[in-house]
Image (tube, rainbow, N blue to C red; front, side, top):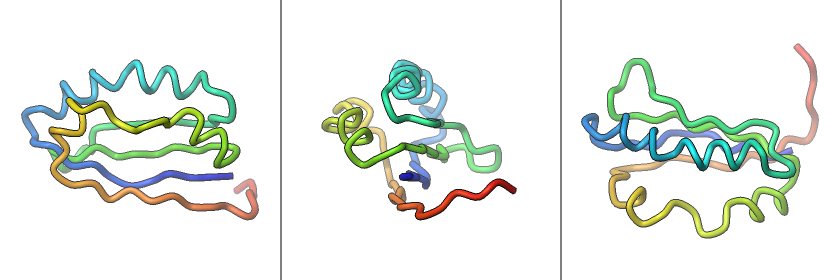
Length: 94
C-alpha cells in the first residue's frame, strides 16, 4: 500500500479555482485501477493551503495514473509543496 500525503500552497485568491480545476483529475484518479482514495481539499485554517491525500495499491498503479504530474498551468501557481510517499507494510483496522 502506498500513501501520498502532504500539502500544496498557492496564493489564497486562486485556491478555489485551483481546486475546481483539479476536479477532473480527482475523478480520474478515483476511477483508476489501484486507487483506494484520492483527495485534494481546502485547508480550513490556511487560505492558501491544499491538503493532499492519496492511497494506492502499488507503485506501478500510482505511476501509471500519475504520468508527468500537474499540467503547466497548475504547476505555475504552486508556491510551495511538501508532499511525500509512504510505503505501508501493514494495514490494521482501528
